[in-house]
Image 1 (cartoon, rainbow, N blue to C red):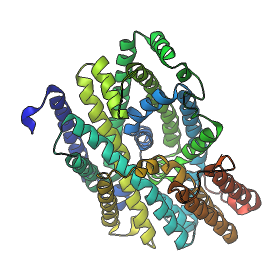
Image 2 (cartoon, rainbow, N blue to C red):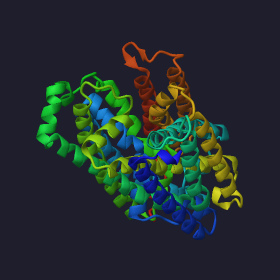
Image 3 (tube, rainbow, N blue to C red):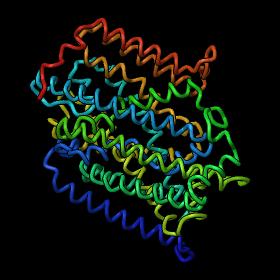
Length: 493
């Protein structure tokens, strides 16, 4: 098959080989530093850079390179206001409540004379929540994460199949990307994942800005770029956009589901808790805010240029839209950089998700802390491999609702927040009430996704009702149960 490769394909393969060599070296070097379960699962304390890029990598995937420009192209500059405000608020909430959460875990370690929990399941276990609540939490988290992992496999595999066709489908490239994800997971654990996140984050930043600069230059400057867009579709330069997406219900649901991500999604919560100290965590959070703005801003220019270039043409996917722009405006090298950059962006997200899901399941199955069990690493690896295989199989299907499921994973996991909040109260009745509200909300949301229930009731999205329900339950628990705040100030070191 390689006898007919063109220059683009050769460049893609060359960059991919360099990337694979880099991953292999990092995985091997990290494996040499692992001295026990804690090193493999949680590292030995990450400073500002590793913490910042670790959280950023968990947030940004190839959707940044592919989905965000397509989002701007279809819905206009109002997306920038929405994404900018949301990301700044996410960083502010992460900083404030993240420090509170870290303080709470230190109190739990002090109270229980054990390890401070470094993942969500350990937090729920040490707080004494019922086993069935913990199992539901892990099952629901996995259910919402698997489709996201699947898209993280399918997206870059389809890109590679476009550039370097091998067989009739993208199966070969899907298998390769899963193998590389498992390489860092099985050999180097969280340390390998975190180190690669730094390089992959820099690759993402360089790629997205390089493409944006070429897009601006190709349009004749920023002013001309927006003038071209105004001539094509003036609604792209105003809210709520050409198709009216940015209505108040969409904005509220999306805003809430995004800002609570660090406290309900395992890969994010673990990164929050493994920072070396509060100072490193605070610095990494402020750095995350800057990084997010710098990553999202260039996608605005790319999206506007894509809208300009796609006038009168039929673009079948977000990936083809960007490839069309690169082929028109950028040197050949950036075609390969985009594909390998999208591959790296997904790798940095999915490998941390596989490790996190495996860790949560292993924690749920053990009575003691996961760090104390001699076979914890094996259990985590088995869990990660199992999820990877399931996702690999799903990535070969054309199950359309899977994409919708992945997009809605943020909303689904956000409905688990009452269970996390329940860990901070000792009142059994309030714990059960919070857990019951969360379980009910998740089930209703799933029924809505599979169209068993309607999407709207009396003109409002079901998500609005569910957020009112869980918000009321959490407010009731906070203001009526003094034990929620009893831990504050008891442990500050």
